[in-house]
Length: 309
Image 1 (cartoon, rainbow, N blue to C red):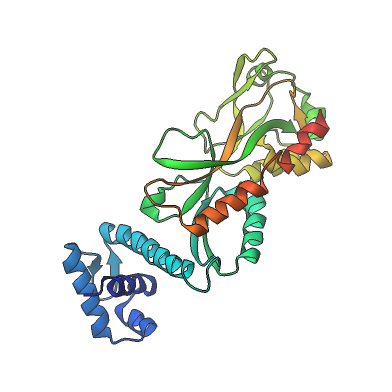
Image 2: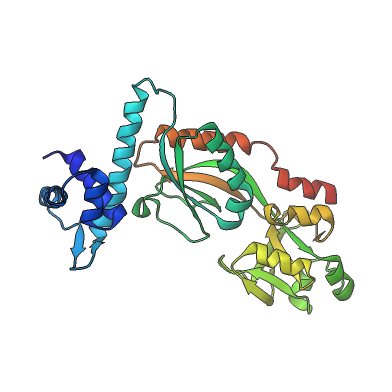
């Protein structure tokens, strides 16, 4: 039994969705594909598929084995390239999970630049704010904005992520300009809230003495997307507490005005994270190094805070 041939056959069946399709892709007979799958399942001692007359669905074990198999074969290809005349050329797939707004606005251009420098890399990108399991879902790495808890993951810091309270000039003219967080708790101010974080109805900041100030606000509008909330604030619908990477252009052009700048706002960081249980492939290492270099220093989206003070 050739384990690598059987593993590649298994991957093709999953990708194509059928034995016949995989046979066409591999240029072999259907019977050869069926035999390889049977050999693989017998060798592993598990069922990789739920088989019906119409389709083949992966078992939970099969899904995990698929992600691991893809990695193994890609790493084998990378090892071969490293010892061939193509040494130094990055090749293979990078499966990356990205936060939606930060990913589209700031990581998208970075990925495009990386692809121009390494045209044989193929990206598989998941733009989402959901929590993902890197190992279970087969990701090479993820970009996360957080205070990272202790975990089995390795993290490299990419950039600081600052937040700012702001509103439109029209809103402030109608409703007045709050000077403290407490005013948001006690007044009729309309707060627009990102609801994918814990305790989203409480806003935090530190005063000039570094004392933590909290305000329990009453959300006027809740949403799971920061750009939607930003646009609502520009239209005068209320006050937002958003990362600068979402609102920096609006602050620069004056359609949003920073508030309570005497407070020190909480700061998170953007990280590239990956499992420590797996060696870091050349393509992952190169991509993370590229991001660290690209975002080093003061982020360009924080220049709006310097201009507004």
